[in-house]
Structures are given as structure tokens and as C-alpha cells.
Length: 199
Ligand code: GTP
Ligand code: MN
Ligand code: MN
Ligand code: MN
Ligand code: MN
Image 1 (tube, rainbow, N blue to C red):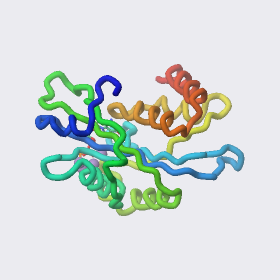
Image 2: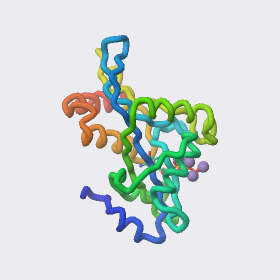
Image 3: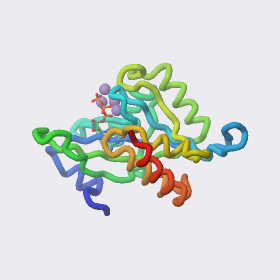
């Protein structure tokens, strides 16, 4: 396990810790941008109330709910749909960097990945923009991640140069690598380019 990471069981053993669960929902697609650039995969993220990009999910209280049912509750609030999340969808858990030196309890962030059908993803997008209680409040909108690179660096590199909450950016990058959603060489180029263009 990488440094800072802990198992789901170790994480839950920390009674004084706060817990947050977030999920990357994604699907395969045959769609092509401008009829020639393959989209390949749809990955959903959200524009948060604080102007940062992150994954749907939120704070969970393990004394009242399991991590997965708490994540499911957050998804109902933020996406307007009750998506079942299971222990098998869990990817990793790690300590969040302390937000301020005085912050009382440590935050552990749990990350999940769930593959869906393209039509299910569209349903999530429709619900998130209409029936979700948090729409326009905690969540300003769902966004798809462009995974392609255009001439001049548009696409993934530009997306990665935005600002992300916590370690959402590395959760995205590691997932794209691990699930082979972007070729490693292409991802490396996009990462290098995004650092250059970061304002
Ligand atoms: P409230 O209902 O206002 O409490 O928000 P929430 O329950 O939806 O919590 P939120 O999604 O803001 O997540 C809680 C904390 O987890 C945040 O303050 C961040 O520190 C962290 N966080 C939020 N989104 C992500 C994410 O996508 N990845 C990671 N690693 N951390 C995140
Ligand atoms: Mn929430
Ligand atoms: Mn949230
Ligand atoms: Mn919440
Ligand atoms: Mn809330």
C-alpha cells in the first residue's frame, strides 16, 4: 500500500476520525466528438459550491451508517438517485492532509469506483440536474472528464489544470491509469502539459 493509505478495516478502527466517501462513476461509450474524436469513456465529476472539482459523495458517520450506505445517502442528496454502493466498489482509504493545524479530528477519505452503462450515466445526469436536493446548492453541476488530447493540448490537459478538492485530482489520475481509461503515455503528456498551463 502507498504511504498514507490504510485498509478499510484500519480506517474504521479510528474512532476519533471523521470519514468521507466519494465515488467515480464511469461508463464506456462509442460516441465521437465532432464525429471523429472517440470519447471512449464517460467519467462523472462535479463542480462543487466552493468552485473546486470533486467526486460525488460526502461525510459519513460510521456510528450511524455503513460507509457504503452513507455514500449511497450522499448520492441521493447530490445526484437525486439512490445508487447502491457495495464493499467491492471500494478502492482505497487514506488520511486527508490536515486542512488547518488547529483542526481537531483527522479526516479519512474513502474512494470508490463504480462502472455503469452509458444510459445509466445519462439517467444520473438528468436526475442530478432536476430532482437532486443539492442541485444549485452544494453541487453546481455534474461534468464529464474529456479523456482525449486535441492539437494544442486541449482536452485532458486543460481539464487537469483546474483546481480540485483534496486529493480528487490524484484519485482521478490513478483511476484512469489503473482502469486503463487513458494510455499511460498520453496521460503522462497531459499531466506534464497541465502543470505548464496551471495558472
Ligand atoms: P456537507 O453536507 O456540507 O457536509 O458536505 P458533504 O457531506 O457532501 O461533504 P464533501 O463532499 O464536501 O466531503 C467532505 C470532505 O471530503 C471535504 O471537505 C473534502 O475535504 C473532502 N472531499 C470532498 N470531495 C472529495 C473528493 O472528490 N476526493 C477526496 N479525496 N476528498 C474529497
Ligand atoms: Mn453532500
Ligand atoms: Mn459532497
Ligand atoms: Mn453531507
Ligand atoms: Mn449536505
